[in-house]
Image: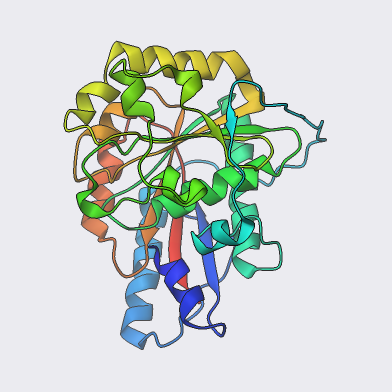
Length: 303
């Protein structure tokens, strides 16, 4: 569970917020002292954010302002499993709750990401973080739901954390369908199931999810396989710019899976948890992604 969700459950007086940091480290919000945050902790957080500014180097994306043409889908092959909106909210999907402060920040993130992808003529994004439980699944799921609110976009959200559930990864089946593990990407890559039998629409228009499936000890080999490369190529080319692909990955510094997957995606969004992600870990992750387009960094924090 991310710090943002914990805070919203603890107290209505606290406000959850995602801060966007673009590739140059520019932020569109001011640095605010967190509730209960010491002066030293505040100083360290500001220093981390300044360090991010030095690490990331390219042009600041602007908000999307194009005309929308509504895309209406009728799911014929994709299974639709409608989930109670309250269950989604309880599971950390806040992008549907337009009366919440965090939703506004998610919408800003959506605008920034879509603008950058448009500039790149790209539609394939990987979301990752340096270490476990730093908010990447919270970010990727809410970003996907928010993009699906755009009338001119469809979204496919793919859970690529195929490893053992040792670190209690919040897989898509749990988040969206409130169920345990169900067949997914690993089953397709191993030849146990057809792709069309694995895709699910969780009752949210224009959103399709592909769960991770059963745990796969050989996950890096599966994600680096020709079958995975062919799948991503097919998904990227079949729908072009009208569909955004979001890959929710495992943590970058703990196994090879995200590094393997990064060869196939157009862009990478990094998630940094305030007062947890170390500068050395961030530097190491960015260095390993030097051949990739990093569209920005999301700071998970409490205000």
